[in-house]
Image (cartoon, rainbow, N blue to C red; front, side, top):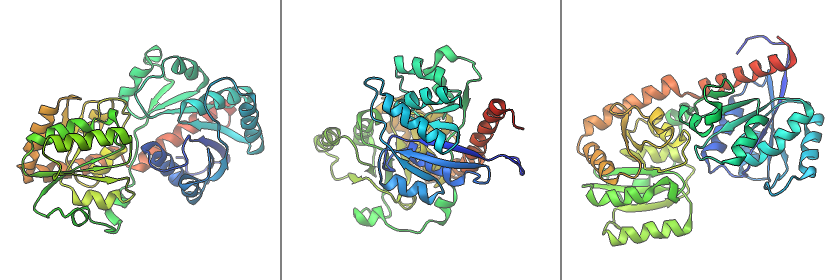
Length: 373
């Protein structure tokens, strides 16, 4: 960031959720928290009051509650409301991260002749919408190189910019021990504990780690997160069928991830589809934990195979079990990979690097748009 600037810019951010249970919401929060407020004044458009609005205000943002709704038909009221906000708040640039907001904000931005940045956080294609929305965006921020495959018609286009998610390392160095998963679930200190953190749903692949647990000796597993009730019941049924019900624990949603990560020995991320660049993997590496993850989307860009952990093909439960068993049996390798993971996060994925890249993108866009140096 330049140390001196005469211009200040009002940025409008949009989010589809009022809670903080997704990686995208946390990424947006950390961006706004660390944003240079001397240059950028953030306003966040949220669907309703809740945990997210409180966090955003605490991070220094103005918050406007307005539920954009879904794209079923073109709703002129939504467009008019967005135009009113742009005028009243003198918005210079809009930053969106979901399809619905991008659709309506993109139209409003075009009508008001201001730029829009669309933040792409998942690899799942939205077919027609992707084709419609990409022309409305001035730039697309992708959280990993793998996401370029979602937009093949933009191949090698400067319109796509990769900015990796970032982690605030101080949260893993200075956070208090607020809880102990081991004591909570009566898991002894001598037991190797695997941790799988994330929403429990089919695309996250938790059935693969459950299947793999049949072949993993001398270890227990915690599944952390809320999710699809039917899918969770299916996993619990599989645990009983496989005879591993006494080695697998469900914690539900938790907001004490740094404390929880201290208690695990190995982090496992078995997702099978839809990933972008998971914060959960970066958090585990920041906590000096080795990671075994699938090759889905941006996962291999976070985990350096053989150095900070292992990458296995999505859906390959046998290889997943083999790599986990290798780490279960080798404390020295777990320690070395954990340290290497921490070093990788420090070098490539600190929050400061994420924020600096985003701010520089804003300035580049706004300089070209306004002609202000």
